Length: 390
Ligand SMILES: *Cc1c(COP(=O)(O)O)cnc(C)c1O
Image 1 (cartoon, helix red, strand yellow):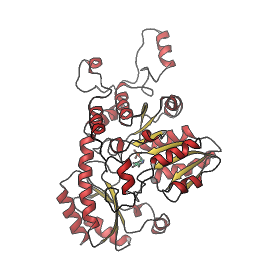
Image 2 (tube, protein in one colour; image 1 turned 90 degrees about the vertical axis):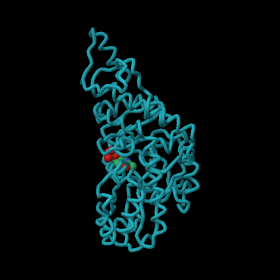
Image 3 (cartoon, helix red, strand yellow; image 1 turned 45 degrees about the vertical axis):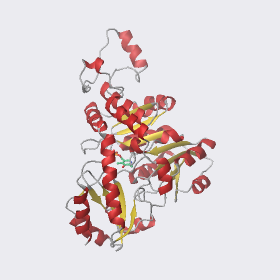
Image 4 (cartoon, protein in one colour; image 1 turned 135 degrees about the vertical axis):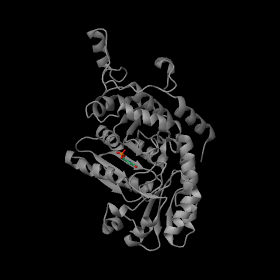
């Protein structure tokens, strides 16, 4: 449930955290530092700066004043100590995983995570890192899937496409008692609606390409964690792998972040109404959205979510790809495209990336449709769905 004090604090963070106009001639928004390097008066002073690149401005690949402001906002929003921004969500996730694992380790992945994250986790086999996937979101199932070599429990909550919720406090407590690191992808909820570090999660990762940016004009990612973990991650996975966020992208991200609290409330309002409409429609078998009281994890959501974003899925009574195609192709306001989290409403079938057999194996119906509910007038969205479902 929304905590008003926390929401107000987040509004302040989105607008002003990390900004220090005095440093920048009292410019009301920070300038975009597009310079690739900074000059030093003496060789010795440059040497001292290089020795701690995290705190000094030396070269573009390390710390940039514009990117740094976005990092301060995201760290504060997650109530974490440190953040680094990356070139994409995928770059942030791979940095977090590579930092946390070495050859011989095992990673436990909770139920359905973002498909490319699953592909990356599978790819890590090349480096001698094994994985298993818990087929449910049950704490007991997660506990019994832990192996002696398990070093990371990786979570997405809500889970991809099924939108089931994972008990974050339960997972964090379980992992702590076994000395296992926990990583969560918080892209769906954004830090506005879920703060996993407060439950004891070790690392939060984000795709900033979705709600954080919010305008379909940037690709970026972020890792938020403790100062101790970030010290190492900065030296290795950030500086060495080099998948950094460009300053011009950080400027766009800063602009997106300023309105994040307002946009998230608007996405939530629209998505709740769309979800209610769909769940009462005869052609719809099921709606997966944690904001509906009929959702299997609704009670858990009331405890650990402070709101619901705009991404939901629903299943047609007619479980076929042909039916899905007919509905999606008839939509006019909802457009067809990948991604979500921006002003525009989008519709998608996961079937475009899997075949029907794979979908069923993963527990999905071929009649599944994913909607990214945007910021259009909600009556137009509902009318659009109504005509397409006829
Ligand atoms: C989009 C997305 C990613 C990947 O992020 P990119 O910015 O596209 O690299 C990872 N996780 C989730 C949940 C996403 O939605």
